[in-house]
Image (tube, rainbow, N blue to C red):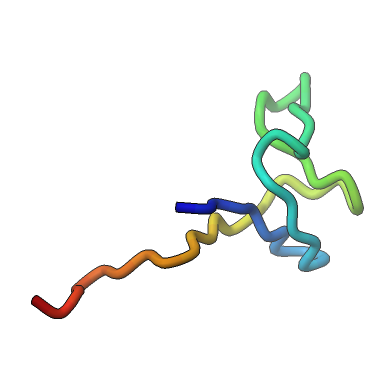
Length: 51
């Protein structure tokens, strides 16, 4: 299941290895704008699949 991160500030998308770690906060950082807030997206995720 593909997973990617979408920056909450600028909307840039990357896979997890493409985002660098911020040594000050320990979190991941957007390579485009430097923001730390992001949304994790999954392709094909179904919370309540039909049986």
